[in-house]
Image (cartoon, rainbow, N blue to C red; front, side, top):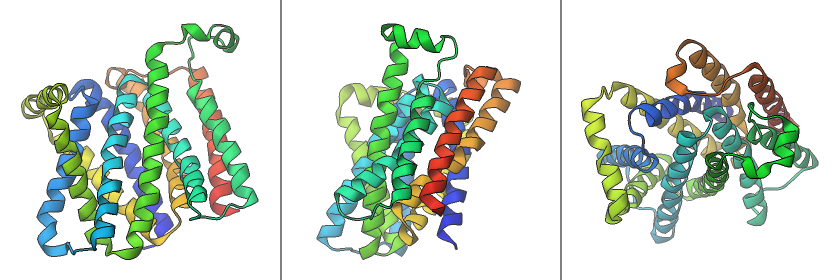
Length: 311
């Protein structure tokens, strides 16, 4: 399979998953830590079931590397789902996705793992502009008011932005780590080690009493509310993770992270459609001005992604 097609397919599925995540967090689970726990628990249990058939010992160095990368994934999920819950879903996803290739590039440069060409510098500038425009979406206030009255900016929006940027940094570390861990071990075995490592990390959350209470409250909601939608949504997410990791193994970490842009238009279309026909599901602030601003931001990010991948 072509690794670029695998990455594109992964991000299209993640676009569906992100919208489903927003709905589930708003209507069912209502806990970012609880939801991240459920996802990591599911992936870990699948890894345990596949371990007798596909798992192999990678050596102590790669074992600790797998464990370290596994730590980053649930932490990034918790921050991302928290931002998704309290913020605008399309803005959160685009900010996160726009910053992931930037952080991936910077980390790879710092570690001497990737080379930087002039087009990639232009791509970074375009991505940053797009992220700034997207993060500034707030249709109920005029631009000049945002400049003169920054102290009136809603605190939850600021927290959502910080969570999105931090999650993007952890996702980028995870991507770079996965890419170079695949070099020394079998693809399926590496996936299983990382899934089981994430399971160990989220189980450690149960030691913290407030986290444990928050997580345990999730399970009655899952059992008493139809869980088919949750299962279907996370099945899409699991397939997307496998496809993305295959692309990371076969291709460039920077290009794979940059290809995440293909999901933005899909997310925007889904958000507009759902908000138009079922506005109670997403509770997004959708207006013509908001859509135009998001399209401008996506255009800048799209230019950056084009420069990353084709020049």
